[in-house]
Image (cartoon, helix red, strand yellow):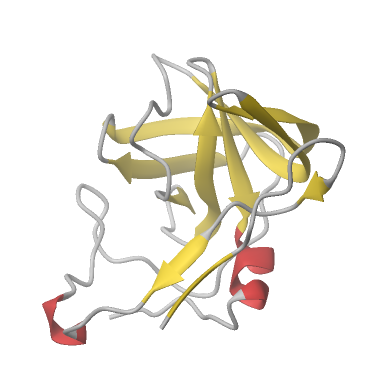
Amino acid sequence: MTDYEPLRFGSAVNHIDAAIAALDDPNSAIPSIMGIGRHANPPVAAFLNQSVAKHGRATGLTFSKVVDISFDGNVRYSSRVAYFEDQIAIIGESGPFSDDGDSGSLVLDSPGSRAVGLLFAGDGSHTRANRIQPILNRFNGTIVTP
């Protein structure tokens, strides 16, 4: 099964930038996140100044804090712009929290390792993440723990 939420450009409002795909061999999945380990349930809502962590392809393991839990604003996709509402904003504390190539990283509370959001955008200083619950609702998903 594969599915995605189409992006709407111009003045339309977006709430998530996410996709899902099934593995051909579910047994090939590694049930932990590099540098973090196993994640826990249940997912939690983000809150201001919450400590978070993620492991991304580009920047590896990084830690920071949530600085906004209701970000509304534009996100650039090449030459097009999409408007998002009700997003999580994270600013890196000792360098960038994310960079190009980290999209799709699960953002976790730290410590605790419970899902908070899904990283989808950044601009060098600010990282944007979708709240986790709307993504789970959209794809009728759950956070699976090993």
